[in-house]
Each structure stands twice: as structure tokens, then as C-alpha cells.
Length: 521
Image (tube, rainbow, N blue to C red; front, top):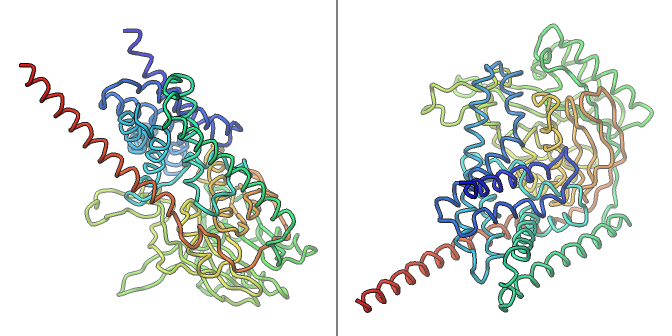
């Protein structure tokens, strides 16, 4: 009975180690060993038990990683605590299906010739599935735990974030075999796999150091823009109160005036910083326009908007660009938060309301367009759009020189979520070799170089102004920007093939045993 508890305990340990490798915890090295307990727990187990242990590990990980959902739904969404916990549990159960699937399939690879690389391909494939299935949720992929390890993550401009996840899992499986199945290294295939992992990791680090040196020498950065980021720190409980609109605008105006000596080319206000319909002509809208009347100054800010189509009014989460007091373009958020900003499949789920009514009931934008201003173009990513690499890629493919993330992370409160959100934004900068500037209502605002280095920031729940001269380069696009997740798709195809071959081999082996058994009779 005692021995039966150990596999479950090991699975839970893996889940907790995974969580501890992510920010705000400063222990990214844990990601290199976090899966070892899970791999040990499923060793020799039947498929159903391996799946269950993977599910346990996933639940331990996601419940401890995404506890902040309770804060969003309870404190800001008004849901009772039991309902908020119930939603968290159901969502984490869904997310846990992916490590459960990995555990099931990885158990089938144990003892095979490609156990190390094959297992890493399986994990990466499950992450790709999570990023694409339903509306997609690539929040805190394993690679994101390494956002501060600059030499390691530079390879993202070639093969994307998934390449880092592949290296991490390969290393986990290699270490597991060294610890618990060292005899398997007597065979040539295992030695070759180990050499491949060491070679890939070495090549990744060498490439990263070379690329960092290139950017440090500014070989690839020829232009600059002076950018000012305003973090208004508007409390979510009063943000949409009409009586607080004038005070909100006054805060942003005052902080912006502090940037006068810096003479910024671009001023950024966060997502829905203007908590009224800017498109309607009134005194408050005129005051916003006046901020952009300074010579050479461009203003980008977030505001709700609406449009009428076929006598139906639709609302949008919008970012405007202004200079000389006039609107020169806007971007409507494309990837909305399911059940937060809209209800998917509304005709079928007519009985479901949005979980956070205060977030608004928005329609999705349908044009992925950079906002073009004097001197450079800004690729806008509103709120959690920054976690979707295809949106950032699309903006750069359409000419964005700088990526801009406008967000309102006030929903998260003082939890780990804003730190996790920031870590994912860093990868968009590296993948596309574009600087990324982040303007967040309550933080964390900051500047991220094309190397992923965070060079300036305003921490949570501070009202402040941040300025920097941002360097950006030529219109040349990275391999990843041009071709996207070809590496991850290759691994997915490879995983499908190895699963098919593994099933075929097992059936052949079972048929052979059956024939031998009949022959003995």
C-alpha cells in the first residue's frame, strides 16, 4: 500500500517543480529536472495508470500556477468563492489533459531507441495542441520559464519558443535515464541520442552568445525612437465609474507632461486607458486629442469603441494612434478572452454568461494592421494577444518596426499572473527581432530589447512614467517571422508517425506471441 502512494507523490512533485520554475519564482533551473519525478512514476506502469499520473502532475502544476483565476472571478467578477474555485478546477482539469496525454505516450516510448528525442517531441506536440485547440491557450509553456536566460532563448528567432521546450524535455529525459537506467547507454542508439542532446544544447548556447554580441555591438540596430510609457495605476473598482473619468484623464495628462523634457516621439497609454468612447466628440475626447498636439509627438492609447453593422451595435477593444490632434488609424483586438470578453459558440451556449461582466461584451476585430506613425510602425498586441506568437508575427510581416503591448493586468491583483504575462512578452521580441514596449494599467510596464532583455520596468501598482530611447533595426525578418512554427509542426508530424509505428509494433509483437502460444499447444 505504501509503495502505491509513491508514484502519485512523485507526480505531484513534478507538478510543483514545474510551477516553481516560472516567475515570479527565480528558479528557472528547476525546469531542467522537473519532469524526472513524473518519468520515474510512470516507469513500468500500464497506460491507464500513466495517464492518471500525468493528470495528477498536470493538476498539481496548473492549480498552483493559475490560482489567480479565483482572484479574477471572485474579487473582480463577483462570483462566489465556491463557484470561482469550481471554474478554476474545471479549467485546470482541461489543461492537465495535455501532460496526461504526454505521460501516456511517453510511457509507450520507454525502452525504445528514440526515447529521449521522441519524448521531447511528444511534449512539444502537446504544447502545440494546447496553443491551437479550441481558442488556444499557450499560457506559460515550459519554455517561458527560461525568459531570463538570454543565451538560451536567442534560438527562438529560428525555431520559435517550442525549440526551448524541446531542449528542456530532452534534458529531463536524458537526466532521468542517467539516474535510473544507466545500463541503456550501453547501446549505440542511446549514446547517439545523448550526444545529439548535448550537441543541440551546445549549439543553442553558442548561437545565443553570438547573437547577443551582435546586438550589444548594435550591428543590427540602426534607428531609434524616444518612447514614454505612462502607467496610470487606475483601480479596477473605479475604472469604469463615469464619475471617475475626469480624474483618470487628469492622471494620464499629468504623467505625460512629466515627459516634456524627454521630448518623446511616442507616448503610450495602456489598454482602455481612456474609459469612455473616444470616438464621440466631447470635452474629454478633445483633451485626449490635445495631448498629441505637441510637435513631433504621437499618442497610442486604448479605448472602447463601437460600430453599427446591419442595425446591430458591436463593441470593440480598440487602440488608437493620434498626432497633431487627429486620429490616423486604429486597431481592434482580434483574439478576445473567451468567457471574459465574449462567449464562444453563443448560439449553443446561450445559457452561459461572461464570467467577468465588467470586462465588456466585445466583438473581434478582423484586420491585423500595424499603426503607422511618423518614423516607424507599431504592431499592437492588446492584453493577452501577446501570448499568441502568430499575432506578433503577423504584425511584423505587415511592416511593424516595434511591437506594442497595451494591457490592463489590474484583474490579476497582486498575484503571479502579471509576472507570467511579462515573461511571455519577452519571447515575442526575440522571435521577431523587434523591441517590445509594454504599457500596463497597474503594471508591469517596461521595455524589452530584441534580445528579450528587460531594460526598464515599472513594478506592480505604481503610478509612474518610464522613458527610453528604443533602438530598432532594418525591415529584415527573422527565420521564425517568415516561416513560423515549422519546427513544432515537424515535431508534431514526427510524433504522429512514432505513435503509429509504436501501435503497429505492439500489435505485431502481440500477434507473434499469440502464434507462438498456439504453436506450443
